[in-house]
Length: 83
Picture 1 (spheres, rainbow, N blue to C red):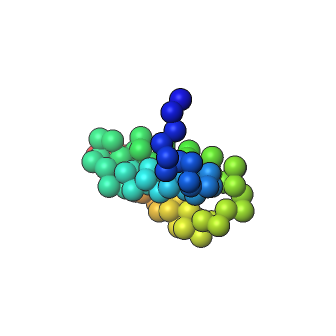
Picture 2: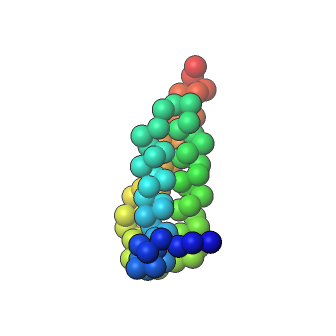
Picture 3: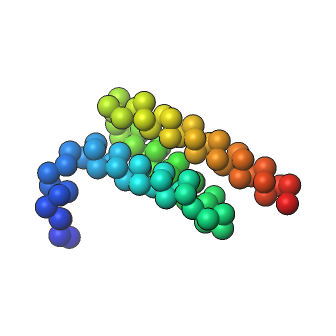
């Protein structure tokens, strides 16, 4: 496996956070046909981040994002039920 130079420079915690952040942004900005799947994927990445770094310095940001993800999932599920 070849690592890109940038991955060697970033601390692992920071990389995990940016993977989560990217997954979050992709999920909340997805089209409806892909949104639920991507929200679930982002939630899984959040859980991995918190399990690996329970006292992460990104706790405030990640908590706000997971609350948004949960709200989006709830809203998305209600919209599917209504249709």
